Image 1 (cartoon, rainbow, N blue to C red):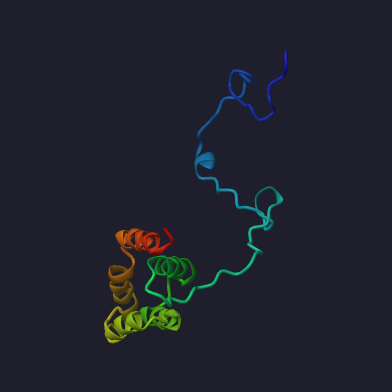
Image 2 (image 1 turned 60 degrees about the vertical axis):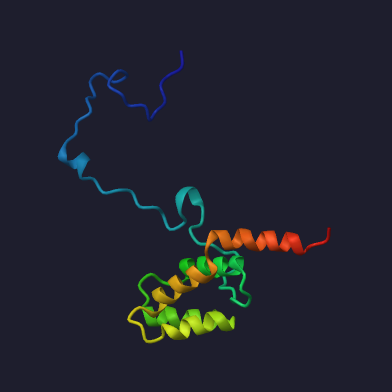
Amino acid sequence: MRPPHPEAHSSSYYPSRQRSYSSERRYSRPRTPSPQGFRGKEMSYRGPRATIPDFVHPNPREFSRLNIALENLLPEDATERFKFQILLDYLKLEEALLIADSYCNSRYPFTDTMAALDDQFGQPHQLALQHIAELMDGPT
């Protein structure tokens, strides 16, 4: 018969060892990972840096990629004005810039601009309509 696994400390294998739920067990500090991470893996990403794409064409896919990049790369604690300034750097489509300009004096310029751009370019049905148009314009 195989001996129990060393980490299997149940009361059936060790009758004299009763599990106690004392205060020291309940309030023990959680283990923190080592600087190298879990099991020696590194905790940092060393691949290519993520970028924010320009919004150049009235393409829902292009807007979706811009939106995802901004959500992932902009700091959560950044101010609305900071986020708005970054957004303006990547808006190249004239129609999108006009929308952004209309919210530049808003109390929440980034949030309001992104909501308006989402209404204009980010609806799922627009992506489907664009795909259908591309198929219709293609060769027979």
